[in-house]
Length: 256
Image (tube, rainbow, N blue to C red; front, top):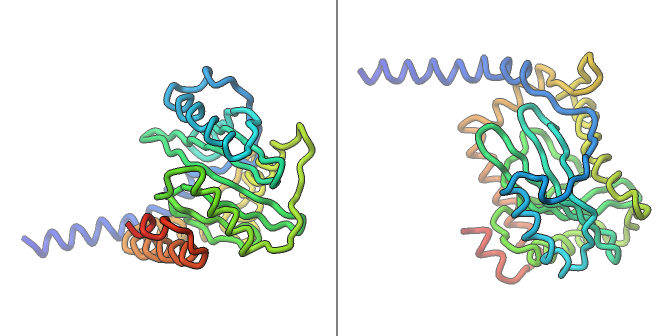
């Protein structure tokens, strides 16, 4: 009996590893364009509106000006994204509260970002979802899902800017044109992954689709045991960052 169970389990796992990439390749699409639609808070779903409203005073206390709330549409297959956008004129940092709604659940996170004239971008967020594609030296993302307050996350972000971008000049967006920074980041996602062979522009020119290379590698990275190992490495890397910054009270929180 146990041999039969093991054989059936092995066959199922093997099928996922073999056929999963094909399913992903033919179903997953990434939008080539980003056209955020401004909306008033009361036009959003109730849960999204409540989250955005709760963040407004917290962001104001950190010196961030609200730049509005937006419906970003479907940036990836079967999702819809909403965003509240903020700017700190003193530091030229930007922030966004993002909610991504899928058929199964809604994922929300807070992110601070800094862009520099040499092309480097640093992002610090609370998004606990592991990326399935390689990172970029020019676009570094630091994830701290257990950090609870904007004040703490922003303190970490500013120290990371000091660590990785000392002496660099921030890229300043003209007043009234701040949203272009967000659009540039989103619209660079497909081309960046096309350059490393993970994606290619679809025939309609409106979206990016996965290559076989991208489909296989992304699928396998999201399956056990690779995902468990990657999660361990990610937590270790982020903990090392916190230890290097010596942020009081955060080290224990991240280890929990």
